[in-house]
Amino acid sequence: MLIVSLKTGPRHFDTNKGGIGNAPKFMMPNNYQFLMRYGYQYDNLPVLEFVKTTLTKMAYGGVYDQIGGGFSRYSVDDKWHVPHFEKMLYDNGQLVSLYSDAYALTNNDLYKQVVVETLEFIALELTDHSGGFYSSLDADSLTETEALEEGAFYVRTKDALQTHLAEDFELFSDYYNINGYGYWEHKNYVLIRKESDDHFILEHSISMASLQEKKHRWKTVLLNEREKRARPRLDDKILTSWNALMLKGYIDAYRVLGNDTYLKTALKNAHFIINNQLKEDGSLFHNYKNGTASIPGFLEDYATTTEAFISLYEVTLDQQWLKSAKALTDYAFDAFYNESSQLFQFTSKKEQALVVKTFEYRDNVIPASNSIMAKNLFKLALYFDNQYYYKTATAMLHNVKPEMSKYGSAFSNWLDLMLNYTKPFYEVAIVGEQAIDKASVLNTHYIPNKIVAGSTTENELPLLKNRFSEGETFLYVCENNACKLPTTSTIEAINLIKR
Image 1: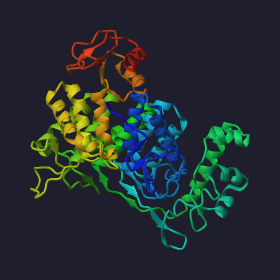
Image 2: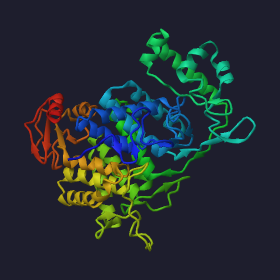
Image 3: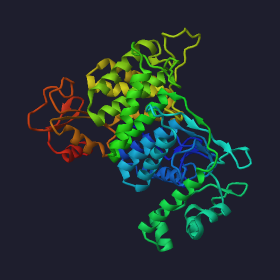
Image 4: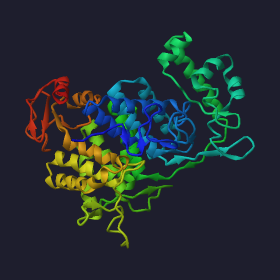
């Protein structure tokens, strides 16, 4: 029996301000992906409430750019107020996925707003014309006196805000705490919220429409003012693994919100990886800059790209992405798998021999490449009826179990995989002319314990074989290859899972 309590040894859940432990606080999105799924599947309301508190407080805090969207690396304090202002692609990709799933579960408009604004930031600041994503924006930028200073691009003084916002300043000041709560240093404020919009409009006797109009105006004014400042330096290298995390973020946002622009961006990035980072022998490059890729891929590149391609298949039902995911996995077995440890080493065996083999298996701000690989293998085993994949994933999980109870935060992605074994996991096959439409409806629901396969025609994929019926679209809900009676209703299929 898998049990999560509200205490994790010497570190604990901050049920008031959100997050785990004291300052500094890192977002650690995979921790909350697991806890959200655990709370949902085990009907553990305190854990779910803790996750919602954390996501809400992060979205209210200065660690989230209240004016331009996107997250900084971490908060230096315990209330998510003052960030280390560097914005990393890998954080934002994972957080878009997390907030997309949280919106699917809760229908909380704040979480949707975070997804939309973060992707606006990515499109504006970290996207190359080729479809690749840049790595980061620096924390430092030049002040008016040409001094390099952290946060200079983002912070505001009270006098400047009064000048820019005029008669709206008092309301703005209450909303974003231009007071002792929001003060940072050197007369500068970092914008931070304390309450929901619903509470704010009651407190200030204004309508929601009026507040939203004012917020739009405030952001427009302050973004225009920000554009006059010296910009943070851009790290314009393109890394395959980080791109795959952002790619999955776009896919998850499309899956939940249905914005076609997100899917177009995802497909452009996926094709960028295929066309620029994938070599003829099936291997990946790790990096790309100025039209050149030079460093051989690491395990993280294969793991994250495979994961993203599986997700892309589930929203498009285009089997090329599933085949590409399998091809990358098979190459990873040849180049990275270590029989004696039953784990994948971080560096390819085909590159120059290393004195010490490194195995990345502890999750951190990015999940460990081995934990991502194990989850990929579990899913691909179901898609292709491949027992070797399944046995390998199971063995990998078994190998890390002795450490999992010592420090859960470092094994959250492994714990997420464990839920696939401890709770029912479903294969949903959708076959017929309306397969894509029905998959789209299914995908808007928070169902973390399923994979989706589908086709509009006859298909030889094991989950789809001999299930096409002319003029009909059926959904098959299966568990361990045992399927319930097919249905034409997406809602009925969802109910079959949730029962």
